[in-house]
Picture 1 (cartoon, rainbow, N blue to C red):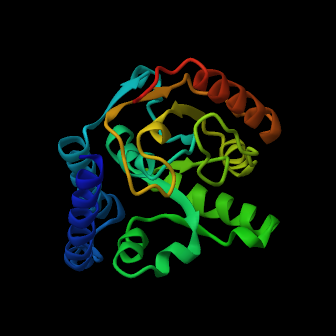
Picture 2 (picture 1 turned 90 degrees about the horizontal axis):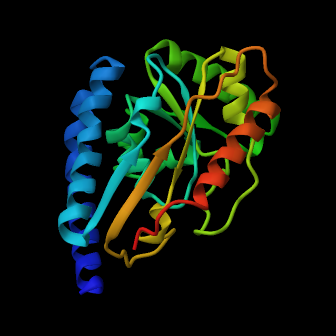
Picture 3 (picture 1 turned 90 degrees about the vertical axis):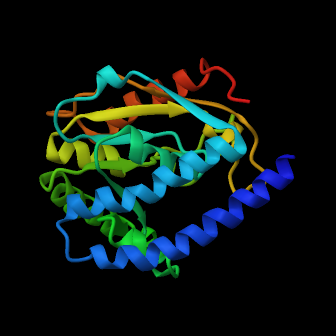
Length: 237
């Protein structure tokens, strides 16, 4: 049943993505935030489809910690699930992503209209400057900024090297960091076709102040909180 459900999910998601991308191109002239809310309907459909077809549900802890104004979210990265579901959980988001993703037919077109922060990861310190410049602009436009500091999806139980970009942006602009831990990889693994039923826990931490602090200090506090919480999350599957 898991195989059949996963196959059906993939087929419906792919077909819906192509149709939605063609329609959403009509939203290009709209203001950024209005455009975001329309494009986010794709994510709502996919998360709904995952619930009814795959039995993947989620619960959120710590919503009361969200600050009143825009912030930088630094989150654990285990699967594609969080990149979709976070659109429902948090205020309008601007994602930091590889510029090359924007050239994927249909999917990349939608991403481009989503007001992302598209960077060249091979550019070294230039990539850091891109994050700061584009991130500052998105925050001023009313977006929150979502960054996965590990840079790539990590299997459950593993930790990647936390990178400075998100903490750098938050400290330079003076907005708080919101740390997030979750266990989506237990039911929606990285690059896995088969997805298992279960309940994902998303845990949002208290905001971490950045004003007057060094980015490395902010990053160390963020990593300590996220990795500490990962050890206490209930199993999703």
